Amino acid sequence: MKIFALGEGSYSVDATKKFIPFDPLVDNFRDRPGSLFIHVNPFLVQTANDLIVLDCGLGYKNTRDELFLHQHIRNAGFDPEDVTLVLMSHLHYDHSGGLVVERNGKLEPSFPAAEHVIQRGEWETAFSGKSSSYHKEIFETLQRSANITYVEGSGQLKPGIRYELSGGHCQYHQVFWLEDGDNKVFFGGDELPEPEQLIRRFKAKYDFDPQKAMELRDHYGKIVAEEGWTCLFYHAKSMPVGNVSHNGEHFSITPI
Image (cartoon, rainbow, N blue to C red; front, side, top):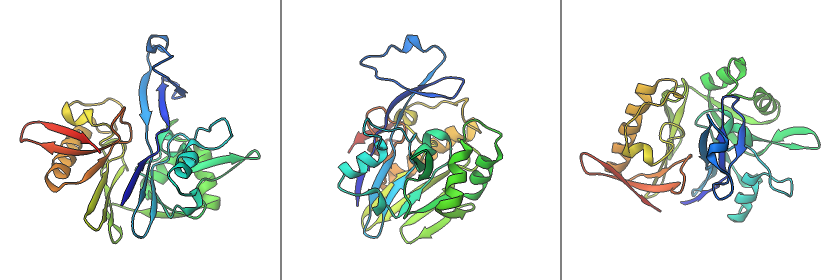
């Protein structure tokens, strides 16, 4: 198994839910009052049988009009058309924007050959239009042109890939457990988005169920520490891939 963090950079987001690139070496956070500052790290995982993308970032482009996501996949030695599975924890825009790419004024699936795995309840929520966290045009494009597998609850997608309905960050959020030989990877999406969130317990107002989300972070942290799973942290500032330890009271994370 090979793991690649496809870092899409840092951004500020305010009440309008617009994501604005933020370079801490140049920009001053005081110039963006009321904003949250996040880092975005989709992942590419190569197993014996699949090339997997885990969440898709914002879908921003480089100066050559190419998705950063595609650029980083090519830098890792693959082609975007080689991707066989796209596993989505949920469909908020900072995770789903890269599902599509604009070419000649039209949106197309970013991974046309891939199977897209999405919780059915999350898909229906995204299409409802009740939240600006979702961009409906993305899902309309996928519905027309992509291969989508809708899952419900928790289960096994195929040998070595399990999905688990978690429902803390949003009602139909899911996490993934990937096994390939002796290698084990856990992707917690926004249930376990940063290593720092293991070290300190807190309730986040942006979660659908803040109490449950806090408890899930602790729960998953203890499992991955005890069983030796490698963790992928989607919103990590500097440590997107790490191993977790727990001494009975406190967590620590070692970068990989």
